[in-house]
Amino acid sequence: EADIYQTPRYLVIGTGKKITLECSQTMGHDKMYWYQQDPGMELHLIHYSYGVNSTEKGDLSSESTVSRIRTEHFPLTLESARPSHTSQYLCASSALVSYGYTFGSGTRLTVV
Amino acid sequence: GQQLNQSPQSMFIQEGEDVSMNCTSSSIFNTWLWYKQDPGEGPVLLIALYKAGELTSNGRLTAQFGITRKDSFLNISASIPSDVGIYFCAVLDNYGQNFVFGPGTRLSVLP
Image (cartoon, rainbow over all chains, first blue to last red; front, side, top):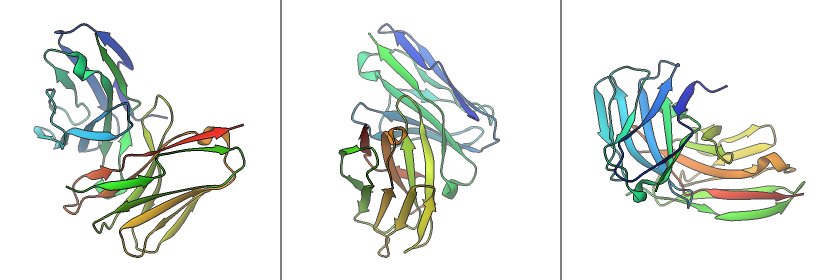
């Protein structure tokens, strides 16, 4: 039973379009994360937030942006999608970091 | 930067066989996690390890936190088709802020 929800699950969009990937959690977790997963499987941290109005860039440089206006909501936006943005995007959250993350089911984005 | 290695990168086994995979680092870490990612889904936490030398089981899964705090292994006994997926290890960085994930081991189970 998922307590963290990502929409859409799949998205095919044309180059140059603006898109927002949604992520919401009902667990009241302060910490939220966005990972990009390439076809080679590796998970790359692109953004994280430790609470409302807090956002940081992760280890992998990304042209996307995030916002954290409400605790439960952590959307990711691409202003102008490109084919190089084609990937799986995973959202996660945690209460106490050492307990690990709860992941959403992901959004598979294809930019044509 | 902090880097984890997982071996093997991929493996094909027969249903019913036992599986062993490991995760190593060049640095010491004090919290190790194992996740499984089913096809088309996000990773799910399997086992968390907090103490060097600790051996923890979760059903058919057993994981150990290496005594040097630089490695961990995951064993799966009597594999079944639903064990198929990608297994990731992860360590809590030394700032205690974020987890660093390994590159994953892809497991395929042949009937």
